[in-house]
Amino acid sequence: MNTEASPMTVAAPADLDPAGPFPHLIRVVLLMAATAALMGWTLRHGEASLRDGLRSIQAARQIDAGAWGEGLRGIEHPLHPLAIVSAHRLIGGEGPEWWQRAAVAASFAAVVLLVVPLYLVGRDLFGDRAAWLGCVLFLANPILGSVVVNVLSESTFLLAWTWGLWAAIRFLREGSFGWLLGAVGFGVLAYLARPEGLLLPASVLATMLLIPFHHATRINWPRWRRATALLVLGAIALAGPYIAASGTLTPRPGPARVLGLEPRSPAFALEREAPMAPGQTTFETYRLAASRMVEVLLANLPLALLAAAILGVATSRGGATPSRTWLFLAVLLAASSLALVRLHATAGYCSPRNALVPGMVLILVAARGIDRLMTRLTIPGRLVGLPRERLRPGPVVWAAALALIVSAPRFQQPIVETPGPFNVYWDAGRWLARSAADGEVLDLTDWSLYFSRLPGSSFAQVREAAADPDVRWVVALASQVEGESTYSDALRSLIGDREPVAALPAEPKPGQVQIRIFDREVVPAALADAGPAEAPAKPARR
Image: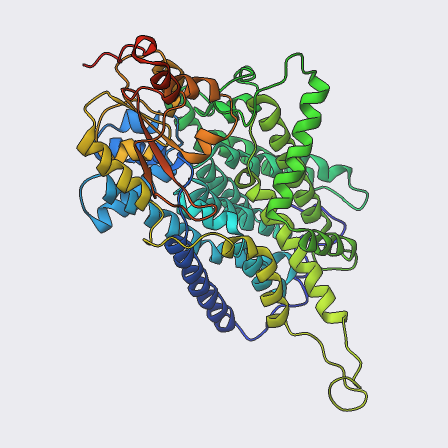
């Protein structure tokens, strides 16, 4: 496909090492080793605080047990559960702890392997220096470490999506249908991990449709039509079987609301970050959503990197990156931003991990800006060296300084005395296994009940459990007990002003996760002070 006045094969970035693949192999291996070390440190000193990864583990256990239908048609897309199944079969072991370890291993491996396509994307976009600098800056992002600690599906999603991004960039540079098939294939693979994977083929399609309007473009129309048809039909053919099996484009409620497949979540829905104000207008809803979108983007891209990204765009003229590639990146960023706004406006939540895709693109652009700055910034020779000499801050200095800025929040986290992100949940699970009976537990963390191996109620049943007399034990994070949320009233009706009968750990460090366990058969302090006549009856026991 010839889409510009120049031949389809466009000059590669000037900063490409002509010495062959060996230097790149060394760089990639060193980056993977550094990533493995950083993720290992994060696992040792981090704690899980999200319950989302448990859904993938439960789907993986169903798939491993042979219940493929239930595992693949649940509320999770199947790629991450399948990765957990593969990891579990490699490391072995029985019981919930071993499945959790398999999930950690799958997430850890995916993030380490992410170095390879990320380096290739950066190199094809902006050259060698920007490639490894972009890898350092993105992989130092503490949000990526949180993905591994919480065994979230973003790990496998980013691996497949970044391979697809590389193939799309190569297609837009060279015009080969092989690269287009790669972009579609990996885009659909990313979709099988998370619904936003469809953003990749959709953005390529939008770019194809916009290319004819570019002032410097001439089109080979038969080839353009074949490429567009291949893109559309290929995506339908690859994603169609899963869509037909699940009966929907995505089984996840949040993304379904973004796409308009489900109505907006209720004002006090559990997934909302905060209740929707009564009478809130559509304009106010989208204003708040746009503000939240900016917040989560800045959580991925500190202001120093945002300034570098602006510099990277401002110095784009005269570079070897084709204009159609810049158009593709702009379409991808616009689509991602719109999706984030819609997510908050329709589902009531939007977290920094939802912005990893635009964050990755902007960090790579920032790496280009830093590279341009490195080649221009000089210090007068009179400060260092002989007359007329110039000292340029080397790439290692820039990478170390900026990686420290990006990853500073990671090192502000408390160091867990007993290493491991799930140890507090293991302790809570053992406590429940010793003290509780089947059906007596409501666990707002989900993980504690999972490790206890007891049947009970999860976070999703918090409102139903408030009216269930069989629920005796209530398990919640300290942040859930003390904070305001859409389910605060239900939680207060369950525990009243009771003191926890167990707190794990008893004296948490600032910011450290604490689990509190409440016994509903303990009379609340206020009623106990009022005398036995005013004490309520104990909840019925099974």
